Image 1 (tube, one colour):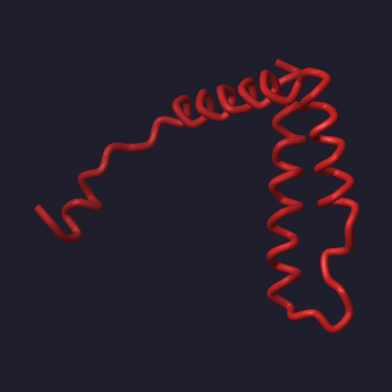
Image 2 (image 1 turned 60 degrees about the vertical axis):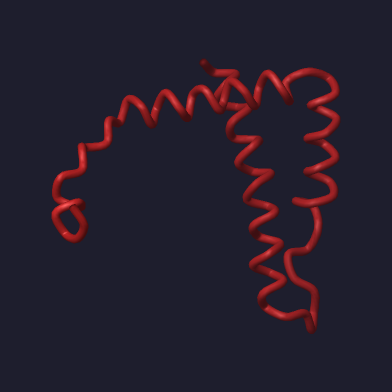
Length: 87
């Protein structure tokens, strides 16, 4: 079957599966980055990625989007570590 019928017949997404996957990834981030070496790596990422300008005068606007994507990845890792420590 192909077409609109496929969209109508999909099973509903179970929110518990999404929550469990998020918690699993948070715990994984804590296992990998929660030790002394991981803390050093996160400090380096913060210094070299987050604490740098997003855009430079005269640079193309696409560079700012690229840089903001980098910042978002570091912030996501930091948020995962915080959530995992609260579990």
